[in-house]
Image 1 (cartoon, rainbow, N blue to C red):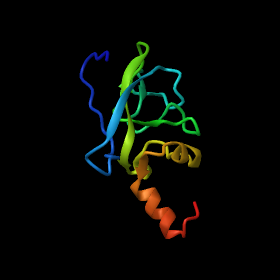
Image 2: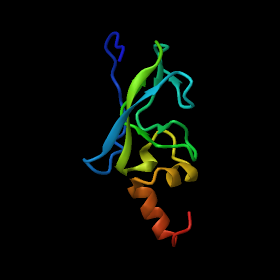
Image 3: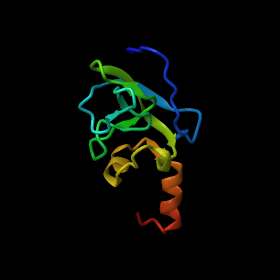
Image 4: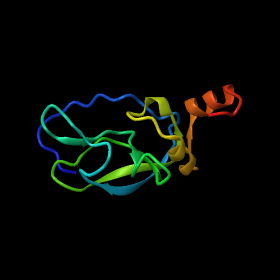
Length: 118
């Protein structure tokens, strides 16, 4: 990971359990959730559904990654319990269905309270 200077990152905790399984993937500045910060860096926030927020989703990025200078490795959570309402972009219904080993504690509880309709 390329790091230059000191940066402070503020993010909500989106983990619902301490144990998750993640695998390394590669991400670049063509990702749908690239954001530009105050310093002009292209950032993909932690908690981004990877690689896309649809039926192709395989997981959620564990940490923020700076892709200003090209492709970078990123840990992608592929198994565990998360808080979907704390992610920077809520996972779509198709993404939730595709990520069969990721459970969203708050979304699952909301769906159960609504009688299984979602």
